[in-house]
Image (cartoon, rainbow, N blue to C red):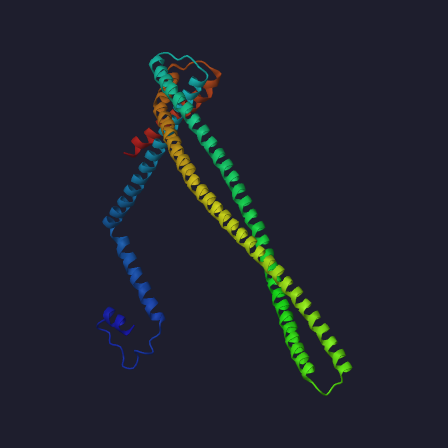
Length: 347
């Protein structure tokens, strides 16, 4: 603040120690004074005021002219649009217009060309729809085949698990029977040892000795029979286990075969899907090109339809369907004339 005041009033010294305590409102007071001086100078300088007024007046004039020119362009576009709508109405209602023969011929040629393209587009659309339906049917059929194979795999897996469970149970039974047979074999060996001891014993009398030998021989014979039964049971269980192992192998082979079938079916689905999608895309591209061709023909028709509308307006063909267009054209032309006068006035 001190520097600002010093620069504004170089001859006025600021007392020492007042640099920190100078009120802030003095700055705004000085600024207002400066602005008032500038305003006073501006009011006294007539030439400056005239140049400034001239600048703003010219700017407003150019702005107004540009706005009028924009209005003129909008009205011109509106008339062109009305001519197009008028031409379409004349053509659709087959209204006769003088000197329109060549224009009609051009329009009819383009419509004939468009009719052929539309027919081709319809065939392409039908082809795409049929392809999509065939693709959908193929997917449904292939999914059913794959699901059926999965169901078979699931069924074979259940059979395999059952066979493995039964095999394990049979193996447990064999182990148990083998333990029983070993126990019986030990009893037989022990019995035979006891029998030898009895036969060579001199402590027992003959009758007692004979009775014990008979009992022991009877038990040994009983244990031998049990051992034979157990041995037969183990053989039977071993055969059953072998049969279950063979069944398990068959189930595993079947599962492997079914998994291969499923993999082949999945590959077929993937390959056919690619083929269908590629063919559909190619036909869709063809359809897009035909659509572009139709749009291009429509664009080619536009100037001829507009020309037909201009001819109808020029000859003012009497028809109640066309009266509304004539009224719109007259109003727009009237607005254009007024705008042109205003533009001429501004120049």
